[in-house]
Image 1 (cartoon, rainbow, N blue to C red):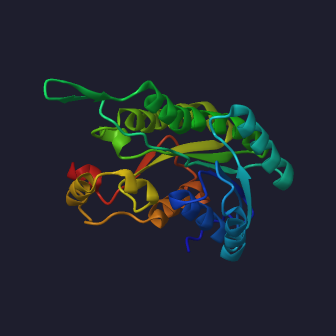
Image 2: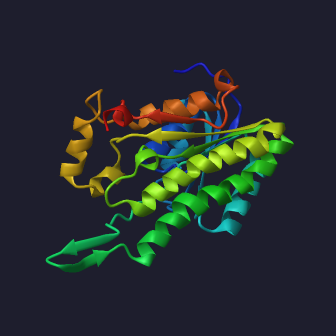
Image 3: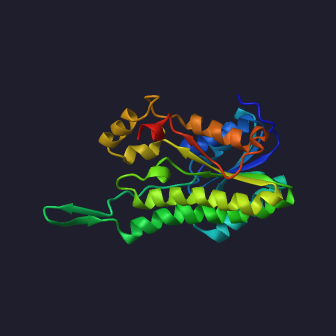
Length: 260
């Protein structure tokens, strides 16, 4: 367990029902935090709350669509009313809708990335990050400060085949973190981004095996990351140990960027 001084602090983790989000919620609970998990599904909510209590914290599960600003505002207010404020936001919620910009085959257009595919990813991965941060910042300022952590990706640093929409959002949330660190530093709110490499979660099941094997071949550590690898990075960045770090992007990728 990382010794962080986070005990008693209040964290919100979006997309926290599975994968990296669930591991992150557990990691904060293990530090003695009160953890509000926001997700679009109610499935398994009671089990997750029990899991967080077993880990050593206190949990809640709220059904929240991060693309719905009014719902996000209401959820943030509910967390603050229940526990007295919000100290940490992990903007983890994200989706994939992969397609080539234009797929050309046999001398003609075979497929394009549709407006719907582009807009769906922008809505969750970018506007959702904006809406959640906007909702929680006033609660952080009232408590004297806080930490916002945006989930980026290595593809936000160098792009990736078939991911125009996803890569654009992951690059954008890095720049959001930089902008917010400038705006909010005076209020003792730190903002950073984490750029995971290829992590063994459900979301990778949608990616072709050929692409996954290619990424592994370019990863110096020679393995996929675990959700806990990212969760531990979030916990450290939220802790007082990282108290002079803001506006930064931490790559947690097994050296993948070095291998590209």
